[in-house]
Amino acid sequence: MAYWAYFRSDSPPPRRKGTRSGDRRGGKALASFPQGTGQSRAAFFVRTFAFLAGSWLLGCSEATVADDGVGGAPPAPGAESVAFLPGGTLLLEPGFVGELVVQVQPPGFHSVSFSLMANPSDTAFDGFLEAANVVTDETGQARNQLQAPTSSAVFVVRASVSDTVFATRTVSVSTEGFATLVAIPAYTGARSIGSWSAVASLGATCSDLESMWEEGALEAEGDEDMVTLPGVPVGSPVALVLRAGHYIGGCVSVSDLSAGEVRELEVAVTDRPLQLTGTSLELSLDVEERTESFVALLGEAAVRGAADYAMGHGEDADVLFADCAEAIEDEADREAFNGLAETYGYADVVRDHLSAQTALRDVIQAELVEAATHVDGPSVWMVTAELDGTSSTLVLSSAAGVPAAVSGFLGSAVLSVGREPNDLLVLGADLEFQPTRWLAAIAKRSNDQDPLDLLLEAANCGALAEAWVAAAEGELYPGCDEECAVELCEDGLQLGWDRARETAKDLTTLRIGISGEARIDDEATPIGLTGDWVGSIDAGELSVAGPTSSPIDEVP
Image 1 (cartoon, rainbow, N blue to C red):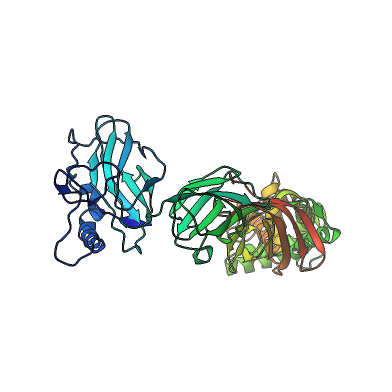
Image 2: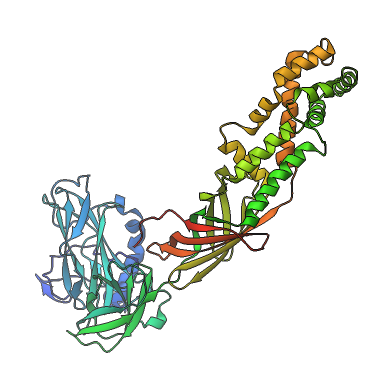
C-alpha cells in the first residue's frame, strides 16, 4: 500500500450516503471535471494528486485546515487515540459516497488528517476524500465523506492526529457485489497457535504472490478454528492466505465468486522454515558427563604446567634462584648478583629455606588439578550462536566462568547450521584452546587465594630475604637491601607462575555438536533453544556431554 491522497479542492454541499457523484443536489455536482479537454476522470485525479502531493502529503502537519463545515475552536493537543466508527470494512458501489466517522479520545477539538492508501499500480483509481483535514466537534468526533472510485478496488482510509496516533479502515468497492470467505486451517504441525488471520490479494492467484507474509487488500482476524473474511469483491480471482502470525501459513486460489455467497475453504497450512539470518542465540553448555580421556587431558595439562615451571631443574631452589636473577632488569646488577651468589652461596640459602625440593611446583600442580574439577556442572561454556545464513559464527563468552579473552580459548569459530523438521536446529563448531592456560585462569578465578599468593606463602619471601642478606653480610648486591631482596623474590615467583601457565602454546580442539528444539518468534526466527550437546577432543571419541539451553523469550 502507498498513500494516494485524493480530496476535493472545492467544498460542495455534503452528499447523502449512497448517492452517485453524477447526481445533482441543489444544482451542483459533487465533483467537477475539465470540460472539452478530452481528459478522463482518472487522468484528472492523477494530475490533481501530483499537484497536491507536495503541498499536503509532504507537509500535512502545516497544511491549512480545509473548510469542512465544522468550525469551532482551534485543534487541541493531547489526543491519545483515534478510531473509526464503525471499524469494519466499508462496502461501496462504484461512484457512491460513503460517510466516515472517527472518534478521538479524550473528547475535545482535534485536527484529524485523512488520506487514502491505495495500490500505486492502479492508475484507474479515482476515489477521493471530501476533505483532507477535519476538526472534531466538542465530543471528539469528526466526519468526512469518501467518493468511491468508479471501478472495483480495495483500499484503506487513514485518519491520523499525529504520527503515532492514527487509525485505518478498509474500503471495498465492487461492481458485481461482495462475497464472504470462511477459511478453515488444515494443520498437522506442532507449533503453538493462538489464532488465525486471513489476507486476501485481489486479481491474483497464489502463484502470483512473492510472499505469504506481506499485507493484502483485505484482512481479517479469527480464532483457533477459522477466519471469516467478508467484503470480498466479486468478479476477479482472489489469492487467500491463511496464517498464524508469520510462522505458519498457506494459500488457496479462489475464483467464480457470486454476490452474497458464503464459501467455506479448507486451507492447507505448513510451518514457515526457520529464519536463520540476522539473529543470535545465547547458549549454556552444561557438563553432566566427562569421559576418562577428557579428565586425563586436563590432568596432563596440570602436569605440563608444573613441568614448564621447573624448566628441567630437579629442585625448585634452582628454579627460584634462576628466576630471581632473570627478574633483575639492570644487566650490571644481574652480573653483580650472580657473582656474589657464588661467593655467598645464594642458591644453597634458597635450598635450605624451602620446605621440600619440589615445594613450589607442587603448589602449581595442585592448583591446576583443583581447577580441572570446575570443568563440570551447569554453564561450563557460555556461547552465542550468531546465525547469518552461510556465514554463521559461534562466539565464546566464558569457559568455566572465565571470560573468553583470558581463558586460553580462541574467541570464535565458524558455525555450521542445519535445520530439521519440527524446529530442530543442529549446530557444530570447533573451539580451539590452550588447556594449561585455561586451568590457570580457572584457578585464579575460583580459588579463595590467587595461585601466586600461594606460591608467595610457600616461598616465604620475607624469611628468604632475611637469610640472603645475612649470608651476604649486608646487601644482596650493591644497592639491594632486605626490602629489595623481598621484591626480588616476589618478582622471581611471578616469572615462574607466568611461565607455568603460558609456555604451552599448543592448541587443542574441542569439537562441539549441538542439537535442540528452537523456540521461535512471530517471524519463525529462533529466539531460544533447548536440547543436548556433545564434545570431542581433536575429533576423537566423545569426551564431554550434557544439556544445553538458552534464555527463552515469550513466543507465540
